[in-house]
Amino acid sequence: MGNVPLHHGSAPAGPLPGGLEVACQACGLDPICSVLDYAAEDSRVPEGVLIRRRPLLRGAVLFSQGDPFQSIFAVKSGAFKLYGTQPGGQQRVIGFHLPGELIGVEAMSGDCYPCTARALEKSSVCELRVHRLPETGRSLETIQRSIINLLGNEVAFSHELISSLIHQSAEQRISGFLLSLSNRLQRRGLPNEEFNLSMSRSDIGSYLGLASETVSRILSKLQQARLILLHRKRARLLDRPALEHLSRS
Amino acid sequence: MGNVPLHHGSAPAGPLPGGLEVACQACGLDPICSVLDYAAEDSRVPEGVLIRRRPLLRGAVLFSQGDPFQSIFAVKSGAFKLYGTQPGGQQRVIGFHLPGELIGVEAMSGDCYPCTARALEKSSVCELRVHRLPETGRSLETIQRSIINLLGNEVAFSHELISSLIHQSAEQRISGFLLSLSNRLQRRGLPNEEFNLSMSRSDIGSYLGLASETVSRILSKLQQARLILLHRKRARLLDRPALEHLSRS
DNA sequence: CGGTAGTTTGAACAAGGTCAATTGAGGTGG
DNA sequence: CCACCTCAATTGACCTTGTTCAAACTACCG
Image (cartoon, rainbow over all chains, first blue to last red; front, side, top):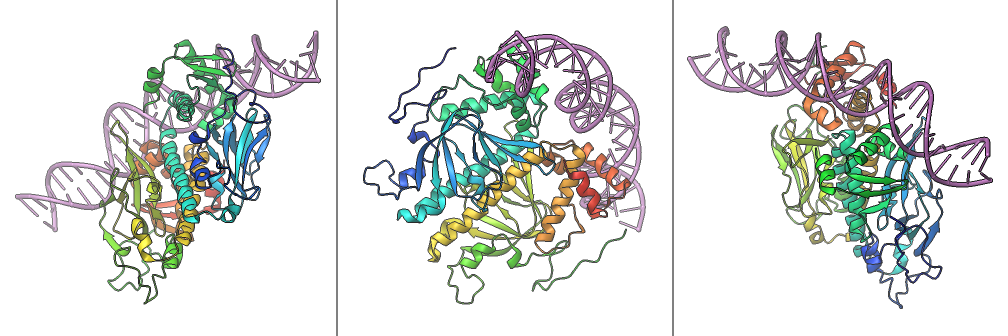
């Protein structure tokens, strides 16, 4: 249950404490990076179009609601929450972003970010300055095709999410949420049996449309039923099939 | 309380019974049609890329879940519901599509439609065969740029929708739903004070995550409070400010 | 060591779901 | 044209679920 040894990459400043880093091939930005041949020595991508490994501390803001849209980001390590502030002043969590996932695509059609993105733990990102893509001299068609795919996936995912969340009980939502985190980590080649639950209970509640007390209660219940193990912000899935069964509607 | 006389348009084949048709300039597909100069006599768009006014009867299916993705559609008149069938067999309504709105964009990143689209009343659509766009000889970049915008809007809309639906009470959801229909009609230049509620109470309930009985109860309550007027499938908003106040969270 | 914020747990309460009975509308066939 | 059938919509009674309010507890941070 201790810390998993970190994979030591080639980053000059050393690995990021507190989290593993997703490999480039497993990253959601990879289709675009590939087009840019960014990895190649002679890629000749102009300076500042694609910026790698920007480290952020816990609580740091990547961009704020209303900031002018400039870039989309890929999480390399750590985790973010995306939330909007309502006219009433209350905050609503829109989603969480794990390593390999993109942040900011929802702003691509507008001129400013509709939400704030905040690091939940020490995190690093890659930044793609979208407006400067034409400078790269790469086929705009190919890049656009990649962006269309990214967005299409996002739309499909959102539809899926809406229709499931709204029809599910609190227990279904929470077991589904845990499985979703685990599956997304697995997809990026990261440890997914045990992982950080770096967001607060209120964040989870806000995201799932539940009171934080309900989240807490149900997590306790799942633990008592030996389906999961919780220790501080660390979660371990003990009985994945049972969780999957619970989460089905 | 009687029926308001329908505005009779100038469509050659006569107006479509039961609904008005959206003008091309107000249609969500217009950015793409414009690129294609489709309206121009000499547009030389190959036959079958953009097909206009395909009439569908109530209950007709535009495409089914699992059908290979070919086209995106714009509703010209009438209304559609979009729904998915769960492994359990139950149906979940993902959304409703009014004149001027697009259907099928959520399939753009995949190879098949993830949902079924069904006409709720006599309806007509324009169809854009996406795979044949390159044949038009138009700048692919411009077309892709339009598609990116469409998708980006869809993503932003979905986020908005998730975060609002999940945090709202039944009353807020339903008053918000009525206002949303009205606003969307207004945006397309269609009558929006009184309009068809062509979907069933169960459809509304499935979409909003409520039991159909709850939908019925709350509609009755809104009517008793003189905020709306209901007569069969016809709805009229009597006190829009009050509805807006109700729908705020 | 104390202060603060997040978490857990309990008890009362409210919202909405479920079940069931009734009404109403549209469609069909005699 | 009317009787009948079917299905959607409405309404009531009851019950489950999750929220709210409040209190105790825990980790984290000076």
